Image (cartoon, rainbow, N blue to C red; front, side, top):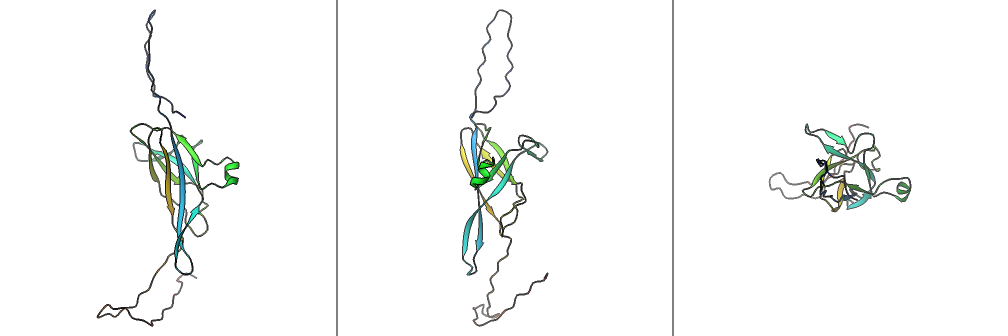
Length: 173
């Protein structure tokens, strides 16, 4: 894939040959992977692959995010797409127009279907693509759980103390 070339005005005079040279830029290929960081019951940290649909946006001069190429036909890319999603037409990779000096797109999760234990990603992630480049953008999901660690220490020395007991209460149910 090549992108559409910029408009090139050509003047043809009667009886004369006019030549035009058009330089085509190869599209860039974009993939997305999403990983969630979480903890097990022993507080061991591990990562899991997460599925998500990301809309592709551009930024206009006023700073507003615009669906690319437009609101009705917005490009959507699936992170860690399943076989069933691919069979249903989901795109695990997109071919997007990109210039030699780089073209910036923005990715944002568009479906309210965050994986269990994770929140929907509402961030616009900037991705700069260059003509002919293949890029895999990595996005990290946020756990819907909070984690904490309690350390009991002596107020005067700051030394750790053993044997403390604590209780945890939910404020809202």
